[in-house]
Length: 477
Image 1: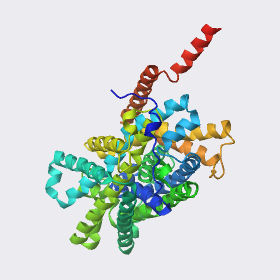
Image 2 (image 1 turned 120 degrees about the horizontal axis):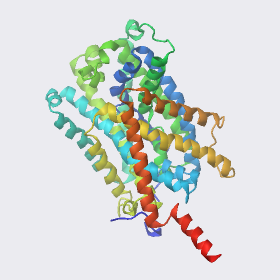
Image 3 (image 1 turned 180 degrees about the horizontal axis):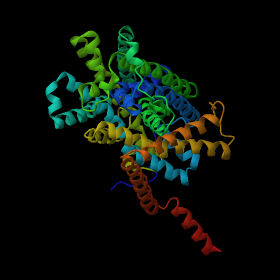
Image 4 (image 1 turned 90 degrees about the vertical axis):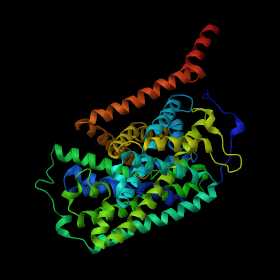
């Protein structure tokens, strides 16, 4: 059985720096758009029961920008493969609590990151079902189809990083064309009476409003996930001190405009009361239904194909970035050293890629909306809130650390982002089935801590290394 421990200098590899600003933006955006607005707009409208739910996009964008500044500062301070894994370890102390936090990040990633990839796979399967109607009646065929997209992406990623950068630009172009087409058709056929069809009491500030806002923002944040994806490839980025901050902020702003435009297009053309009925064709493939109504059958088929390309770009981008996380953890001695190897001739972490690809294929067999909620909640505590606390500690304990980029208005953006993440998390406690997601998060974290302690005891590192040292010192005295 592979063990967790320092892999030694023989596995240290300098990855080629092939990603510039345009590549970085395309990687982030391909992750952020994906199937997001094409599968979540009906669910977002349902959270608050009407077009007022669109305000969640603005709150989500502000949270993403505030949290993006955290990533920008940490990403330029510690530009390396693994992103948040490295930030947590550096901020909390490499050989102390930081080792546990870094381990928990990798552990929760195995449960949340692969589910995130699966959402694009399931979205692609749903839109494929719009074209091939017979698939919808065969649930297992749909699930196997969703899993196959991970296998295809894994095969395409099994190549040199230079080739990957070119493929990403092609997929990104398809993403932009799809989004612009939908927004353009929406503006041409917009019906204000549908867009502003607010129900009675839509803006009453009560508990239902606050819970709906929290749930809607959670779904919006799912659409924004990925503004930090380039951070997972930090040591493969040219001029990280410039590329990382600019790509993060540019990606958020562009995606806000595109996703909000798509949401307005759908809401201004399709009756929202019809859209929010789960299990219907319009709920599962709203983009295809939208295009069929405004431009006809062949246009809807064309859009469906373009949505599939856009969604596949997301799967491809996510798998690319996330395959570097187990690799970086293994190099650092916190994860199984088996995953620290790179391909002999193509120079990429092939074992880590296979791990992420296989797990995401398995995750594609689960229900879409449930896994969106589960992956967001499990990521909030360890990754987002933990990383913000880590940055605050780093600023206080190591003020002299070189920082090529410093957060604007520090610490206000960090504190705002943390408060919003906690709000989104706690909202689930008031939902009828929210306890299931809370239990899921608890199981992931507790099992992660338990496994960490087992490995730490076997390998004699923190907290057992500290106890051993103190015991030895006592005997010497």
